[in-house]
Length: 248
Length: 248
DNA sequence: ACCTGAACACCGTTCAAGT
DNA sequence: ACCTGAACACCGTTCAAGT
Image 1 (spheres, each protein chain N blue to C red):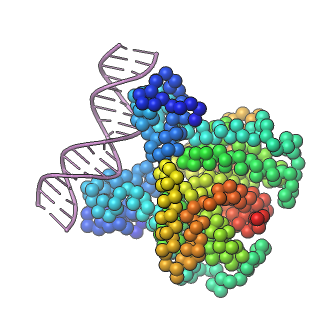
Image 2 (spheres, protein in one colour):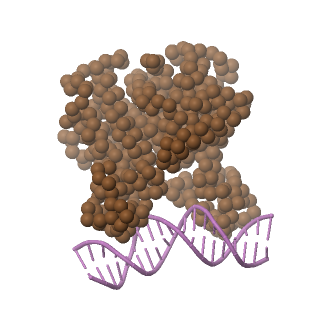
């Protein structure tokens, strides 16, 4: 993401964890997670496969690092960990306790989730890896800590807040991985559009007696026409759901 | 799932798609999705790897069939497709139009989602495969059709209902794959308990200045003490979120 | 001390040979 | 016509050999 990676044979000078993570991320973005292979990563950096093991104990460690790297991007966003500088008003931390209405604290939670989902959207195929790592790296825990803080301000008990944060963050990953437009190996715009068209045609060819509503919704299912609205609405619904008072 | 599969060399008599799907499912449940391999599946049924290709064009087709098989289990549940015979009252299909309160139609949607999540929970590692296939097999489309019906009864427009159903079903998969107790290769109870203990200890060892709330919630994050409540609450929140009137 | 090539035990899949 | 074994092009990872 920073500089163009070594091409052809490539110089083997700058081999390091961050460099390899960047290379693996580009590989994943371009060709999917299955393309992220120790051997291909090594080849990409003009090095023997075994050189990778100097930086990652095994493939699982590499994948963990990919998830961690995605989560680390949240640090560059809004006031997550504690040193943010965004548009949100910085002094509303303790406001809106227990309120069910749309008060000041609400905006904070929605902004937080919007920022997180933006990070996940940058590398959709890595989103599941990030989800698995959220409690296993500082950046991920910072996100969770922030969400727990907001939920506590809204009057949730620690247990409730913990369950709710799990719910929220997992659902955000689902939003990203389940985004309608998503096509596995759609490198270019052309292939994507073709896949969407085929998906739509397949739905429209269904038995109208059995699946009338699915057919009527074919356009929505085939492609995500407006991702911004898709995510904004999803987050609105999730936040509203979390605010529901559960019977105990 | 039906009968015990061929063991040892095994008889190669009953080789068929359903038999292979059942074998692959047992393999996935016991050792994870990575253990589902053409070669291991063949060996398990006392047959050459190439014999598998008589029933599935390639590995992707096998995985598709695994997802479809999970979704097919929804047919054995409540009144999903149209010929159900469960506890729910059968005549409330057209009731509760547009109501935002907790009327008759609501119970229907929650029951529907509960049934679906129960099916997914039977084979958690296959849940993502089922999600990808939901619009590509009849059983999956029946579920979607039912959800769309309930949402329409509640006054959603077709577009809204389509987006909401996507949201709901993806979130359910997230609920299952993100269930706290989940441990990758935890065959027995022993290994699971050990993994939970380690996870908890790791959280408790964090810096209390940076992650006080995460530490306080360690128990909730380490294990899902009460799955029934976890899923019931999650579904309640999701349904409530879907009922929210979005500003347009 | 470090990086490497060869090797091992696996993959999915192709293909020509066997019955 | 069907199933198979050998083969090919890949994997992740181990290990002893090179510099």
